[in-house]
Length: 273
Ligand SMILES: Nc1ncnc2c1ncn2[C@@H]1O[C@H](COP(=O)(O)OP(=O)(O)OP(=O)(O)O)[C@@H](O)[C@H]1O
Ligand SMILES: [Mg+2]
Image (tube, rainbow, N blue to C red; front, side):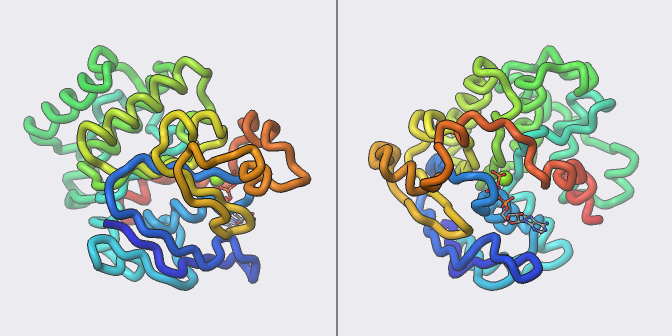
């Protein structure tokens, strides 16, 4: 389904992702773990093409999507929707409009500017909100919702794209435990019921163990573990998180990554800016 071949990203001579090769043969729930700076976000962002690839290939159903440009690149970005730690909704717009923004990548610019949604599209957006248990919030401004509700709106926006893959970058790092569970349960349901692949960067081992059927550990840009969660021993976790950093510390970190601000431009990126 998805294959990464020798995927590499350099930032000014520093290697953020270093020659990563991975195969995803079926639409499972994949967790990526690793300490801060390991390259987790860069890897997801390369798959979605928010970040350009320095070297290597991203094959989706046999086609290299790493070199796509323009409309073809946007079409690919619709197939692999991103969900971010900071939700990246348009705060002052209503919830339903935020969900409909999931369609921006495949709309003519004028229709997008004037929010010209068809009745069928609006009905679909409301049905997705209903499925995620937040239909009653549809008319509210996004900023009026709780964090957990906002993240479900972001997932609804992703679903509006009817993606084959959902890439979630620390989707629960800003949420309290109860909302974190609701959001993870939602992602798991989408993965099992719809057969969509979910690849999520996760900042706690517990979450990875509980929800994932495959866990990938990254360290210094490289994959140092790839296996089932039950194979994730304490020793391996220490190897992933590094001898000098207690993984408990990493597991409780809620620091906002430096790239969160760039992520805030997601909606405009979807417009092809
Ligand atoms: N736009 C950028 N410009 C320069 N360096 C970058 C950029 N984005 C990431 N990096 C660097 O690449 C490396 C990997 O960063 P990345 O954000 O992918 O790590 P991460 O595993 O997601 O970390 P975190 O857990 O803190 O989110 C880091 O050293 C980071 O400083
Ligand atoms: Mg990150």
